[in-house]
Amino acid sequence: MTAAMTDPSGYRRAEIVVDLDAIRDNVERLRALAGVPVMVVVKADGYGHGLVPSARAARAGGATWLGVADRGEALALRAAGDTGRILAWLAVPGEDFTDLVAADVDVAVYSVAQLDEITAAARAVGRPARVHLKVDTGLSRGGASREDWADLVAAARKAESAGEIAAVGVWSHFAASDEPEHPANESQETAFREAIALAEEAGLAIEVRHLANSAGALLRPSARFDLVRFGIASYGLSPAPDVVTPTDLGIVPAMTVRAHAALAKDIAAGDGVSYGHLYVADRARHVALVPLGYADGIPRHASGTAFVEVGGERGEVLGRICMDQFVVAAPESVQAGDEVVLFGTGAHGEPTAQDWAEWCGTISYEIVTRMGGLAGRAERRWTGDELR
Image 1 (cartoon, rainbow, N blue to C red):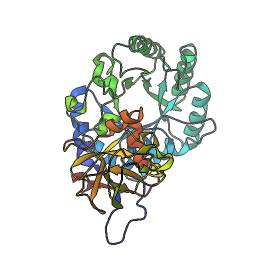
Image 2 (image 1 turned 180 degrees about the vertical axis):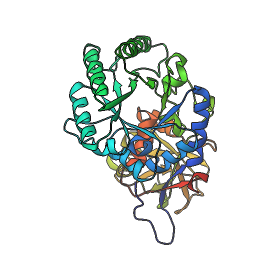
Image 3 (image 1 turned 45 degrees about the vertical axis):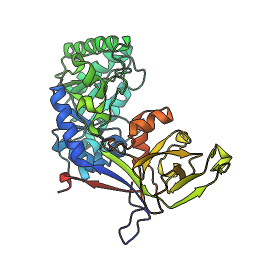
């Protein structure tokens, strides 16, 4: 998100603050827990925390690899000066891989047809493309099916022999790693080992084998292989909140969202609040108006269920969250201009992104990604030593 509608005096009516030191320290902690090299996933603008700043903090924390979804993200990292290993894993038929190959970005391969497009790019650039062959072990999303895996491996071996690619990785993705007892975890790991064996029997000199995402890396040690991919955990949120908390892991949420109350006033018993009068006051109340709404990433699903921190207390969201504002209950002392914290680390009693996720019936990934990713009217800024 770029800064928007910022008062030239420096006054911020709402802001998203990202602690880069927290990301760095989280990555250091996760790397120690995993005991193998780490890829930090910075796709979707660093899960809303900022692509380039998050990547730099991750590198400072010891991330050997960065993971992104698409070519634009990978090339933005290269343009910002990142020279380390990057994997980009999502493309559509007809996509041009030449810039990625020229920029020494590793690319994922799901099919023989996609491999043909990558080898064409490699020939055009005049250098081998570094590829990671993806096998679908049971997520039924991206990757070659087990029936097509042998054909993809054979095509990769042929392209490698021709000097068009270097097949440096084999990888897959868990479907239920946040549920340690789910039977899919065992079946997927078994399928992944079988896929690796077939690739090695074909003569591919694989450098890295990676299956585990944040939950897999933390909860299933047998799935760590040569590399693990940490996404949400890098930003201080648990990938399996029903199993393990950030405190258990020794990680700290990196994002805080806060605003200044646009208005504070009293309402009487019987007054309806916001659209549809979803909430009707059962007593006289003091309320504050928060100048953020669903256009800024605040989930409308949190209407009438979420809380914020205002005036040192938790104040519930009253009625519907609107496009650019919502109303909260507030202590009598709260005035226009006072700070309202939507979520943060939780260390001072404020709600966390996980709290908002539970109030909305979703996951913390969605909360932080939509907050940082929408072109709203909150200014996003970064703090920490990693800015120096």
